[in-house]
Image (cartoon, rainbow, N blue to C red; front, side, top):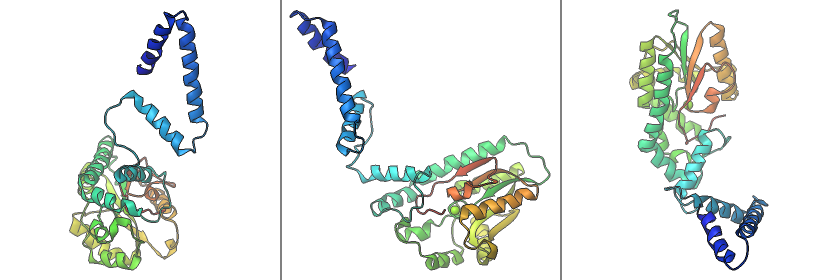
Length: 287
Ligand SMILES: [Mg+2]
């Protein structure tokens, strides 16, 4: 609208000096179209992209932060790409986002994001007709889905350092990982609704006892089955291993209504169930 006024005011002024308004406006619009074309000729040019962004801001939408000046802004975008699975096979949190991820994971936002996911899962579950034959199931991943390893990651750079399997396993055998509170709430609600719960984790079979101890200590109980990686699963990508296990579950007549996990490899592949629920995790990536 502002642009139009800027066009009309000089047009009126010139018109009284003997030129037609229509011609002035036509020439001005052609000029704008030309400028736009020059801006869009080369999208690989950062300066031009910046010009287009500034031009778009003429719409006066309130709020927003300045890009390029704020690490939080860039890390917000990085985390969005992670959660939407646009960014894959990343090895660790970028150095410049370590503090951002730490603030996110230890603050209200992580809890709030988790609450939304588990709340929607619960809403979905409430509308499912349970047949009562013990075959209606919900599949849960464990790490960063039911149990939080945040105490470990807080001591190890929130995912900004190379993963150290030995040191992580030392943490696992302590069996001290707390529950994600909204996952525990969902877990208990599902049982009340009549679902059976199947736990499917990338942890090794050798960690069965400590894993069960940790789950019980964190408040989880009465699961139908706890599936860990056995010798035959060694070396398989998580997405393959988990798909195969879900296929076996379905082969036994179970109906997988929901599947909760913090990695896309928990949720993609085959035998994926009726609906997936992705919990947030910007600390590590498992393919
Ligand atoms: Mg997990």
